[in-house]
Length: 414
Ligand code: GLV
Ligand code: MN
Ligand code: MN
Image 1 (spheres, rainbow, N blue to C red):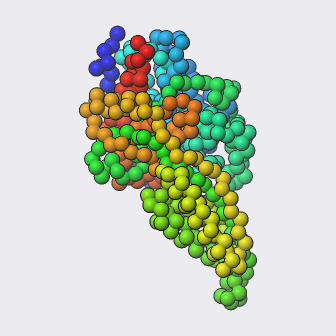
Image 2 (image 1 turned 90 degrees about the vertical axis):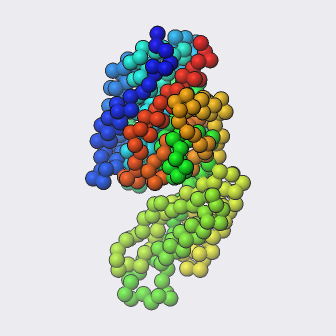
Image 3 (image 1 turned 180 degrees about the vertical axis):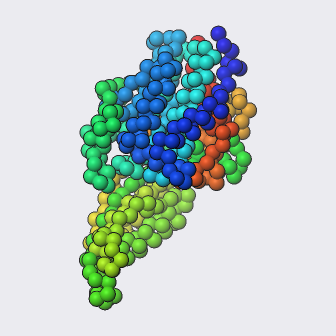
């Protein structure tokens, strides 16, 4: 039997796994384009499944493509302790967002197995499908189905901007599994992730002890004017949908500025017909509002919704606006947060308590089981960017704290 002091993860092996899987969807600028349920996603899933099976883990896939790799514990009567995140990326994503949480968990599992350490409870790695939500909105789609926030049919019916359906694409890549979503249970989940913001780096701290996730709301807006000739239509007689969208984007920015530390963003815009000598007739764009306090988020929503019709009327435009998603602010489980604090101090790492600005599968899983997160720094706080960068040592520190926290949680079952 191995003593706990031997349970040191191998940062180089973790790094090698990160770099190997970064080839699935590698971009010229050093990032990853691995949109959910794409061929690249299938390749990384196949790799992950094979590696887990090599370790002797049982790999199960549910009807939303969520993947669960389990190693039994000493006791049959306990549900697994899960470690999970996501392997999908943004269209111009980095190598660490989500991937670190899955591969850091794989490294923790490899360490347990190498050392022959038997946990009391089973230990499980989860790859949640479509955390990013950039191809099929909303984000955290399949952890949301797992937690009962969405139905599987809602997930299957989501369409990307090309009109392809999530359910058809999931089936096409061979990951519409047999298990009912939510039927593969665990008793707790720890999610390791890069911070995606600048605080840990600015304060020279190694580990973020995450206490919760801020509230998020997503909207879709279509502005309609009239396509007309740019040369022949006098300025005063135009119905320019893009001008309307520009003013609306400015107003949305102001909503964020007026409710700091709230944030308000437009990230996706489609201008039609997008021709250099046509006054734009229609613009579609997406809106993302976030704040840690739901009451303030309500006020942000009200300000945003009041601003748009005014602009549309001034410019003689038609407006269609709707909220497509709402994820309330979340507080993580105090006993799991304590395991993370303890796990970091056991490894000698400095810590900083923080709330997450980004959305995570943990935010939905917190409704199904006690959950928390561990953050590590990322260079310049930059994420959702091909230049996203975190060092071998930082990745290793995160995986070590993940393992320590899981073992700390497991100790009470001895
Ligand atoms: C997911 O990455 C989000 O925070 O939008
Ligand atoms: Mn992520
Ligand atoms: Mn992300």
